Image (cartoon, rainbow, N blue to C red; front, side, top):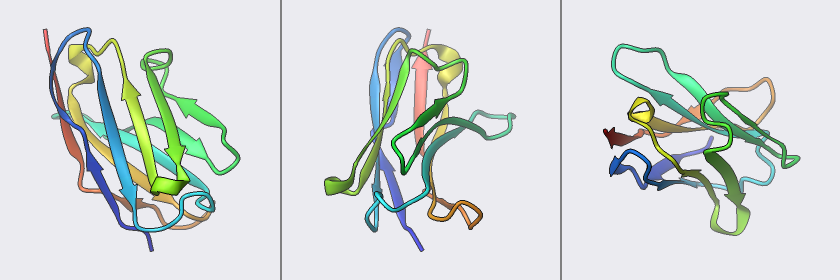
Length: 117
């Protein structure tokens, strides 16, 4: 089991930056995938970025080049650096962990990101 806690959300103007942090309850180096999802009001939750245990990353097309996912095993943390934020990035952002490739995914409680125009 993995417990996750997000932080770093807030209110920012369009064009600004935020850095989200996800603190895990165990080492992340052996976890198959860590990811950031988001859910805007009235919309489905979507996968924003992932980082795998081999160091590879994936991004949602709309955030590629603006967002960067990274991990720090010494701090048991995963980060999402978000630059050039847009109002459409407004959502609750969730950290997720899938320790095994075909196993269960664990979720944090989420952190609100609001981008004003």
